[in-house]
Length: 143
Image 1: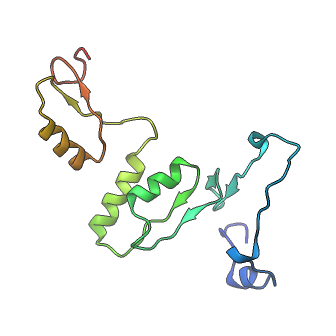
Image 2: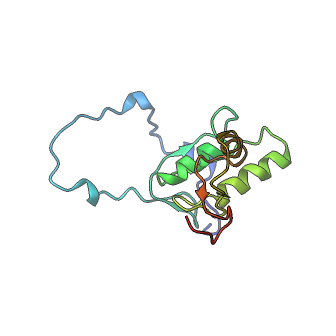
């Protein structure tokens, strides 16, 4: 049984207690420890640990690459939906896997004579709104 991730349906639904959002109310109050001492780390699967026990739904109106990236940036997980073509699924997965928070793996570099129209088109095409401006318009030039 150690080779299986998660719970079986019998284990999951046979616990006898279930909660919904309306069953839990948080009241403000004094705590005698620092908020930084709270550890919400959770095992999502046997091999995947997340820092925040929150996941987004695999619904086509909820989770695609942008949501999965946002969830990962706060320590959660986003499950990509499957209501798209295989090529779209692969593109979404590649976008999520290529994203490194605060790190641009393939920076866009432009020369000082780049127009705002070009930069707008670049932002739309690449999905981010910043570019390095160098004297040569290439990596390695003077910023």
